Length: 281
Length: 281
Image (cartoon, rainbow over all chains, first blue to last red; front, side):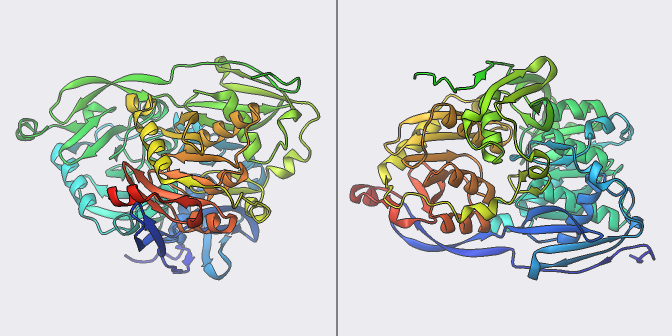
């Protein structure tokens, strides 16, 4: 698509995504397996160190853009002049057009969220969710849920090669795959999606978000911030993920696998299809 | 065991660990399932707000002690006078005997680590790992690995009731279960173990640490900080988790399930047993 004059200049840094190690199994047999890369990426915004992310390294520029977006540190991608990743020093230099106001103050409050780990969200995200309104008219057909699950199942992935990564994907409401990102941290994977949506000027209102990870509060909040009314996972949810989804009016589907799923919230948005109701389960 | 005069005063706060929600499955059938609780717990140290953790809430006092320990904010449990959790305000008041020096400065540097999420570790943990020496003479028998896996498999757990939580456990080198904690964040679960080890004055050098989560850099570092030479997981590892384990001389076993495992590092510590080598696989 055409590059807007305000599209930031981006590096296209790449690094190996898997690493071979020798292992010994329960019978004493030696073999070599691939494991996913995990590397630090220290973020400098206008030459000030902000944070160090641990990442697979598959899409660092999109990750950083999405991180700044999802942490609410930058309101519009037009504020960002360039994102230059340099793996030789494991760092990324972000240059903004006008600086980030109160960056010290805004990054000082730490909310260590779930993930499977202790995630980190700066600022009071919970304060913001009541301002979020997801499109009530958005609909998703049961057959599209199955199509999405099947596309994910057959997707070429680091997970299949090396395991131990989480994947996130963005689909249209017709089930066409737009983006697929993996990372050692599932929150990195969702941030990379958010970054690409920004770069490509893609809105969330008619999209479906899929994650291999659990639907914890932070994942639901990030989906809501991106304006996406549907959040699907092969995993389960938590009480707070469920509560936030109800509060913002998001449709949550957990345990999506094969022809199985559990619709948790936003029931009205899922269009069950008679022939599938009969065939499924 | 006897309570030392310097043992902190602890609340014994409890809260429901699961929550029932109505779901609709792929055939349109309604049912009620249990999902794990997830709640914020804001930590005040000497009346200063430090951080908000998202937690299942099963062992909040041990979690906070372990969090302060693993974040290197408190060097000895003797420095802590009391830990009082109050779920009515989702907060915990920690009172130290002499305050935490430079708490502002020491919590300002953010390393957002993997987990499945973006964990948060204050300060340069990587700088510390080279000072860690795990006991080279520690040994673990193959049969004890199987015993540990079986104890975990049969353990009563929130995971079996509601899914979507991670478990961590501490075992003796003979495979006796000492502690088992679950949380929505696996880093919370490991912190709770660290807190209990502190409270009970349990050393790590002759122990085995088990986690259901992946062996990422932060998990390996936390195990190393607790002085534990063995780290087992039913999941896999990442390049940095592997690298840190080699650097500190920790024995990593991944994919522990049934009679299967992959020994990744610290090969010399695992004692293969001939009859099992023949029987396994």
